[in-house]
Amino acid sequence: MAHAVTRLPDAQLAPMLAAYEAAVRERRRHSFIAAAVVTVCIALAAWMGEVKPGVLFANAGRLTTYFASIVPTLRWDSLGADLAEWYWNLDHWLKLLLDTILIAYLGTLIGGIGAFFLCFLACANLVRSRIIRLAARRYLEFCRTVPELVFALLFVVAFGLGPMPGVLALAIHTMGALGKLFAEVVENIDMNPVEGAIAAGASWPKMVRFAVVPQVTSNFASYGLLRFEINVREASIMGFVGAGGIGQDLVEAIRKFYYSDVSAILLLIIAAVMIIDLVTEQVRHRLLGVGGHR
Image (cartoon, rainbow, N blue to C red; front, side, top):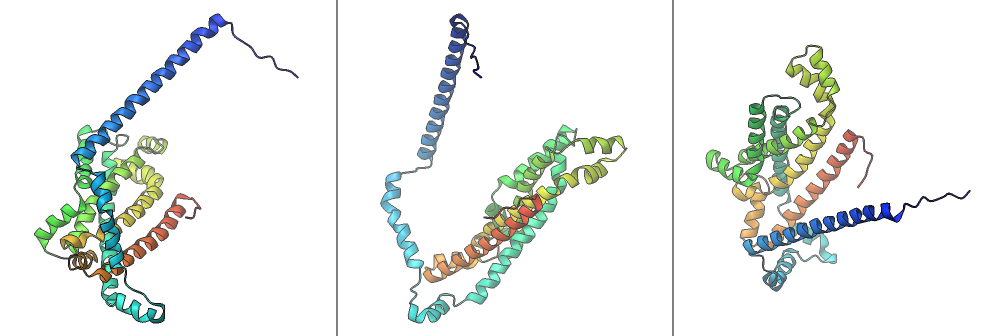
């Protein structure tokens, strides 16, 4: 069966087409302005940061030369002896790598606990007091704004060399980062259980405990595991300022030009991060009910 197509008279169609073309021109103008602003910002950033492509390309060979120098010579006929010589200090490095993972774990745990208790105070849908919300949010911003290495350096000066400064630095930064993520999760919850708990006479802590926490637990755990992955990488460089972990041996090998030690330690760190990433990814998928695989 044929369908008739209604065609508007030209007198009615012309204003609609004109409005459409004007909207398209306006959109193109906005896109052009946005592209121009981004281009100017990139140019200013490159100028202020002294980014010089000519210098980059002229000296790029030095980087490849350095990586080539840290790769040991491995021969098939003496592979076992070459590997043994390459990883001559494996027991010590594994111990330091375990220390690094424990520093990341403890820093993530302490920071996650702090973020858990503070995030509810930073949510507009749970706290009416603007002063309390602003205080909680500004504190979390301070914690995540200062880099971990800066915190670690301050704690090394205060408490001396060792893992404790690294744990404290990661804990503070993790508190700020996870607090922000946790607060965003809480602000997107279903408010019906919250209103029901309040109507039943529940106090604020009980309302959070029984109406909010059950809705956000899986997301909190997922973000916590993701942060643990990040902290393992961050803990690997805490040793650069004397805050414990395998980073201390890595920076010493770099400074003393122990090329084979540099590559051996780097491979250990990469392998550890990859394994932790794969394991925690599967755990996060199970918590969120996603059956995905990398």
